[in-house]
Amino acid sequence: MNIHPPINSSIGAEVSDVDTKTITAEQVQEIKEQAYKHKLVVFRNQDLSKVEYIEFARKFGTPQIYLQKNYHHPDHPEIFVSSNVLENGKKIGVAGTGQYWHTDYQFHTQPLPMTMVYPQVLPKGKRETYYIDMEHVYDALPAELRSYVDGRLAVHDAKWRYKITPEDIDRAVIDILAEVEKMVPPLTHPAVIQHPITGRNILYISSGFTAGIEGLKHEENQEVMKKLFAFIEKPEHIHTHPWCQGDILFWDNRSLLHKASETPKGEQSSSYRIGIYDQIPFYTGLAAETEAA
Image 1: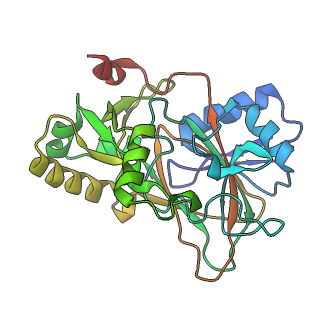
Image 2: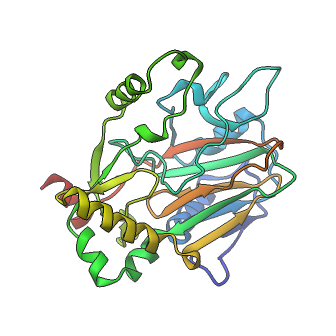
């Protein structure tokens, strides 16, 4: 197995000469260490069945079963399906997921530590995933913005990202949103978390899920979040991964924001995601202690 570190970037090690079907525990550990260090690991030229893909993901930790069943593959609930492609004439999963800056399960009491994505059908046009290294962003934060996040809690709210299902037809939007809020109520995590392996501080907010900073008045929150998101999403902070058939991407949700590109109109796109709990706390140290204070 060869691991090639990223060139001119802190993101994106590439693994070659490894058989993902027979990968050893030692190789898995080495890859996880690279994922914590370089945030993103890319496997090329893979050809796995659904069962083989799940077993590969299971070597890195415990696969997540996503809280909404309409995202599940019908035969394999571990697989979160993002797809506009019919399978056997039936709609599978949800189309157009994740086309905004976020980190997976940021709105949950147990955020998702690692994500693995395996494309099945790539559009002929552009198919990319974009990443932002939030450890780097925190280090670069101007003092004015850092003063708003250090030692504070950020509020995350998922209800505005809910996708309407066939069961929602004829229901009032206000009732749908109230039901979603009961399922996943707004919650807080430290605005700055400490990575349990590297010990580095990471800005843990996103324009996709973060509604504000606890303790600020509404008008101030609006202004502060606008400034924070503008700084985070500067073009020079964005790393682009163009997909190739056979890619599997594996990344650390503690450190990275990500965003899917839009599927070109009229083209097909399908990918299989598996969320993975890596058996260590999502965050530790002083940044985490803020939440319990």
